[in-house]
Amino acid sequence: MLQESFKNGLNSVTEARTRLEKQVKPQLDWATTELKKVLKDMGADVTEPRPLNAVVNEIRSKNPSLKALLTRFDVATYDVRKKLWWDANMMGAYVADQAGKRFNAEVLPKVQQVREQAEARVRQLVEQVRGLTARAADTKPADEA
Image 1 (cartoon, helix red, strand yellow):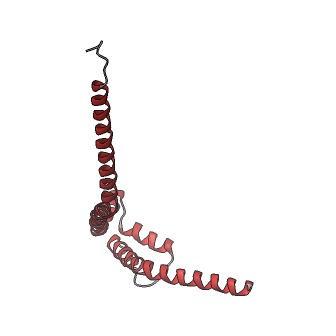
Image 2: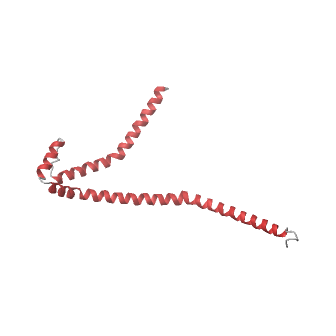
Image 3: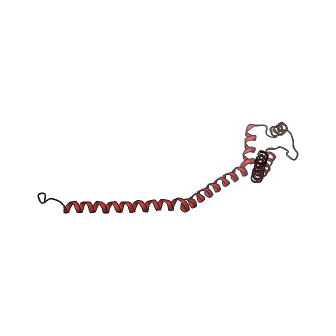
């Protein structure tokens, strides 16, 4: 029994790992491709795997001044920055749209229901108050009239 529960737990972890890999792999591949483009634009040769310090030294040699380095960095990352900005804006719009749809589908009907119940209860109370005031006016002693 313990072995079976352990096996089921292990299987669920394996399935979760597989789902996560399927979700993350495309983004990771895109990021790797973009990083290679940026490094190439910065002056590094990234056709074959090399140690990080070799890549950094090559970038330093191609960009002798800070101004040159920053200019190349700005140019190299322009497309990525614009794409990330666009994706963030579109994701924000999508989330706002989904929130609006969910609000209209789930929250608004409940709010309207509560509002209608409250209005109905207020109407009942107003009628009760009118009835009580009318009854009180009818039962006034003759001395007060």
